Length: 628
Image 1 (cartoon, rainbow, N blue to C red):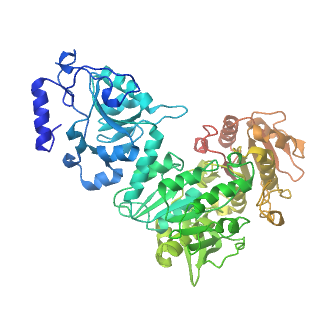
Image 2 (image 1 turned 180 degrees about the horizontal axis):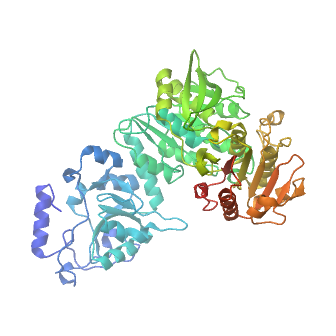
Image 3 (image 1 turned 60 degrees about the horizontal axis):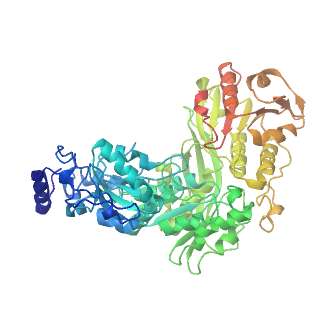
């Protein structure tokens, strides 16, 4: 690869004249133990090595000065790092691995190397640094050879993986520039901190027990939508200790705003994520019984873990949180005095926070079905003296609080004109996959509500309420005659697991609810004084997984046969009917549930029905779309 600098060109010419590999070092033969400095490892005399006379292979490096792609294309790739910047951010040590496996000091022209960061060889583009992460079920060091073969400008490996990387390159006869670090995850996070330090615009960090992704998409829309020169938002589920750094590193250089979703499953995680991305606007959507297992076993532990996002902030940051529920004041107590604070609230709940902060309110929401079957939800909003309406694709009880939160962030925290923010939401918001997505089956004779991304007690009851309120017009051929709820297991609930599953089933069956806002031990003061929303009655409930075994056994009702007992496999008896006429089915696993739905659908057993599929992502390979 030609080098722009005269010095680099001269060095390459000299080495080619000697017959050396393009970037091979001329050093005396030497070998040192693994614990020795990198520069002392595997040094050999290349003139006496059998690979000395091999035709030089192409050096897999890219220089910032010579990249032929336009700057707009480079900007899409995110933050680029030179070798010295990468070494500084990761506290690593640079070396060059020759085709013969020798490790030597990198050459001066290596400083011209610049590239963005990639951790997956399947998506790696020529000229990127490949960072080899380790996980419980994978090791990126096994793919170093693939990365170099695809044109990586260099590799980032840990000390343990360095020798294996050198062996892989020697086997392929390839060479690479390498940065060796103690821990590649720590290196990734260090690079993310460096990328964050370069960004001068607002960074919105969003956490909460539920509603994070929808709220992040709504905030992104309110700020003008994702795209070049606008907003960079978390993609997919990249919201943990790996995903947040990847989000920061992928931010285009011309982005005006960053919207970062921040998840957690244990105490202390949000403190670490906050230290990496330093949000200037800090948002907590809702506190609920999610990831209880890693937070001390109760909802109070979850609230303490979520509060870390506020505790890590400074007076110059803005703070946004839900004004409803028993945890509002607990969260607000962590806000530094003098900070900008904005609240949001959605019906039917009232404002519980003891605060005079301005509040963005969702006053009401209504569902409209167009002639072509498209469903939209109109949400009426109010912020101080402004009022307006946003029209959102899809439906669901989660849309109103997300819209109210988006107005609180865009208008209250960032100073966007409310009319502009509302118009942006209507124009740019699109729901994520598997979050209350509607799918018409059998020519519109059945409606599928795909909410299979995740499930917890709060989101499950909200989904059931949405199912109950689904208008008949959603079914393109006649009126809805039945509502079917497929409820999968809810995980990481610790000691609350059984009670939480019982409460959700009671809600579905129309039994007096046992679910409370501050459910379980550690509930906030006064939490037991307010029950959940009105119970929801459906016609059929399909319970999936071992978590529902005891719940199913406790259902009051007669064993029933017919199509429901025949369609679903798993459990004896497989189906019961309650005194209120609700059919309850238990399936051993998601495969049985999927098979039963397909059989019923193909036989016309679901004609006239709306089917809610509420599962937890990653629990199995179930895909509601397979029922189409």
